[in-house]
Amino acid sequence: MSSLTTAINLKVHASYTKALDLSTVTDLLSKVYTLTLADGNEDDEADLLFHDVRAVADDTDDDLDLSGVLTDAFGTALLFAKIKFLLIKNLDDTQTFSVGPTAAVGWIAPFGDITDRINIAPGAMAVLVFDPIGVTVTAATADGLTVTNGDAGNAANYEIVIIGSTAVA
Image (cartoon, rainbow, N blue to C red; front, top):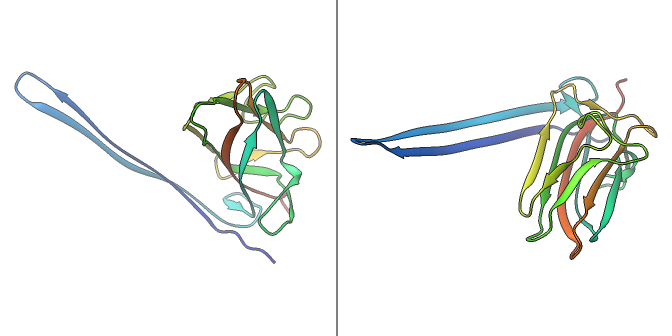
């Protein structure tokens, strides 16, 4: 029996300063955004965790099947029905890659269209936090996510974290 409790905290701290004629004004922003998910497969819950460091060769795709092919740290196949959190961090210094639905059975829900992509520059990351209800994954028809390294040159290494839930009981 497995159990997953999740607390996602995104902290934004910024100090914006501007020199004026007679003074310097500073605008400070310090904000923490939090998503907490209990163990389970209902709203406000998650029971599946996938994380990995992966490589995508130059001018190729790394296709991820979100329903049945990815495995957790214990070797169990993950059958995501809802995705609540997705983080992809580009570890490469030179390669830009894109993330989007696969052509055949693309996970279109968060992107809007089969051709939509998020470009992730070297050292950058994309963090998608879906509401606690999550974004639906449909096995065999809408469960493919692809990382495309369209630049000739080197492989691009990346970290990926996916948190979600199985089908609602």
